[in-house]
Length: 99
Length: 474
Ligand SMILES: [Zn+2]
Figure 1: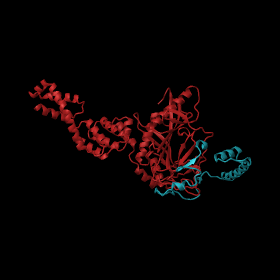
Figure 2 (figure 1 turned 30 degrees about the vertical axis):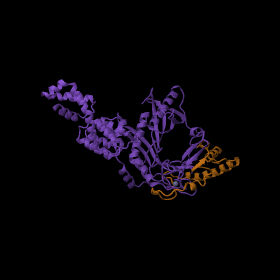
Figure 3 (figure 1 turned 180 degrees about the vertical axis):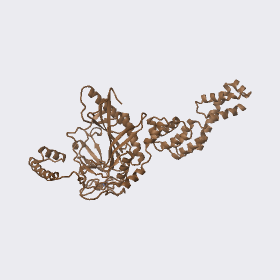
Figure 4 (figure 1 turned 30 degrees about the horizontal axis):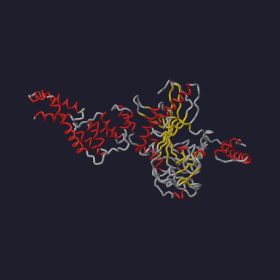
C-alpha cells in the first residue's frame, strides 16, 4: 500500500468523511492502487514536457461582462435546508470551521 | 524604523473587488446593497452540472493592474481549485490562481522624503470572493457565540484580485503610506472603488521583527480584519511591540493569527488551527488556460494613465509638500486644480490649505467647472485676498455657485466691513491725516498698514488703498 493509514484519515477529515475501520482499510488499498498507477508516469523522462493542465487544446475561453437575469430569491432558496427571510440559514459558523 | 534595536518586517496581502458589472464566473449582476440572495444563479450557488465562464473584463482589469505595478504578465496563466469547507463557499472550493498567477514580480515605488521606497510585488492574481455570512444571536454578533449564521450569496463570486508584497515594509507608517498610494493607483485605474468601509479593499499584514542588522527572518504572525488605514498602522504597531516584548523577555514568537480590535486597540487571537492549511490545490478542470494575447497586453499598457506616484513625487520635490498632503493633492482632480492655482499665482501653502480644508470633508464633492472659473477669475484679479478665495473654494461646491457674482458680493461685504475700520483709524490719527492732506502722501502706507493689521490681513491691499485715497481726499 503506497498510502499510510494516517494519510487516509487525514484526507477523510479534510473531506469531512467519517470512515469505519473497514472503510479505512479498503480505501487505503484503493487509493494505493490509484497512486501506483499514476506513479507509472514518473518512470518516464519528462523533464522537457510541460505539464498538461487541461486535456482540451483551447485557451482564452471567456465571456463578455454583460449581466444576465439572476434567479428570483425564492428559486435560489428552494433547496435551502433552512431559510431565514431571504437568507440561507446555516449552523453557527464556529461549528463548521475550516481545516 | 528601529525601536530599541528591533526592526519591523512587514508584508501585506491586499484583496480588491473589481468593479465589473458581473461576477467572475457567471453573469449575475454585481450590486452592492441589493436585497439578499437576489443576485444568484445555478453557477454561483454551485448547483451540480454548472460550468464557470471567466469574465473577460476582470481578466483585463487584473492585467492592467499588473502593468501599473510593473509586473510580468504570464504568457500562460491557470486557475486552480483551493479546497476548504465553509458555508460561504458552496462549491467546497474557491477558484483562484496558484503557481502561475496572471501577474508576478512587480515593484511599486512609494515617494518618501529621503527617496523612493521600493516595495516588491510578489504576485497579483485573480480569484472569486466568498459569500457574505451574518452571524445571528449569541454575544454581539461574534462568531463564537452565534446561535446560527445567515448567508447571502450576492457577493459570492465577485472578482477579487489578491496582491501580495514581499516583506519590504519596515514601519507602520511605511505600510500605511504604501497602502494609501496603492489604493489611489487602483482607483485611478478605474478597476475598483477600493473602499475599505465597503469591504471592496481589505488588507492583511504578516509581521515579524528582527535585530537591526540581522539578515534572517524570524517567525511571523498574521494580522487580519483591519478596516482602515490608521487601524492597519496601529495594529502593526501593537503587534511589533508585542513581539519585541516576547523576544526581550527571553520568549519565542509563535506562528499565530490575530484580529485587531479597533475599539480597544487590542489584538485578539484569530481562530486557532488544529493543523496546517491543506487546500489541496489542483488545476481547475472546468477552465482552460489564459494566454493573454500580446495585442491585448499592449492595448492595456497604453490605457494605464499617469500614476499618482509621479504626481506625489513632484508635489513633494518641486512644491515642498509633505507626503500626506502630496497624497491628498496628488489625487485627481485635485492635482490639476493645484497646478492651476500655482499658475494663477497662489503660494503652494495657500493652495494646499484651500484644497485640503475644503475637500477633506467626505461629503464635499468638488464642482470642477466652478473651481476652474474661480481660478480663472483669480488669475486676472490678484488683488483678491487669499482668505476670500479660500472661502470661495469651499463655496464652489454649493449649488448655484458662480465665481464672478460670489466675489463681487464678497467685495461689497468687504467694503461694508472695511469702511468702519478705516473711519476709526482716520479718527484716531488726526495729526497724520492733516499731514497727508498737507501733501505728505507717503503717509498712505502708514494708514494701509494700520488697516491691514486691524483686519488681520483679510482685506485686499488694493481695495484698502483705493478706499483710503478716496476718504483722505474729502
Ligand atoms: Zn451567478
